[in-house]
Image (cartoon, rainbow, N blue to C red; front, side):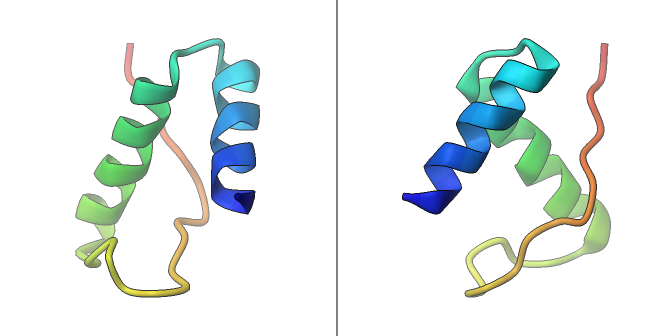
Length: 50
C-alpha cells in the first residue's frame, strides 16, 4: 500500500504515468546493480529521461 502511494506521488510530481514511474524505479535498480525483488530495498534517487 505504501509503495503504491509513493508511486502515485512520484507520478504526480513528475507529471508522468504510473508505468513511467515503474520504469524509473527499474532503471535505478539496474544502475545500482541491485535485484529489485530483494526485500526492503529502495533507490535513493530517480532519473527522468526525456
